[in-house]
Length: 108
Image 1 (cartoon, one colour):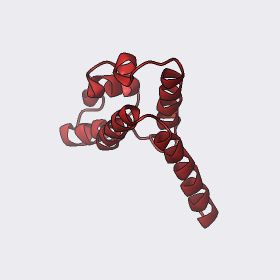
Image 2: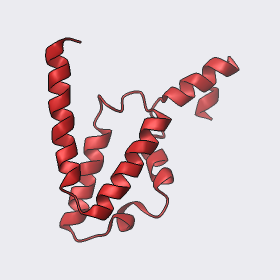
Image 3: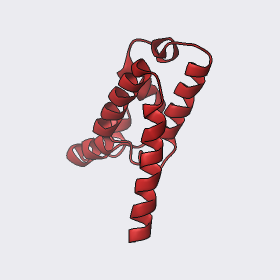
């Protein structure tokens, strides 16, 4: 990864966060909680993938239709996030496999 890649990544992240800041306050709060949760759980492709921008797209559609954020995702933010990443490899799963010595244990 060169310096240009780093700079481009920062530009993309700032543009992404500008979209988040344009959301209504309740959407911003839920997005930030989802982001914290996903950073802890650690889907491997979180920053390179389309998950976070996809959430913002989904939220923007919800705002456009006049729905509240909890109407879209329900009351359990963690369960919603788990549903989004259920088939994605996570750092937590890899760690669990490494300490158990059994491949695929963390998937169950």
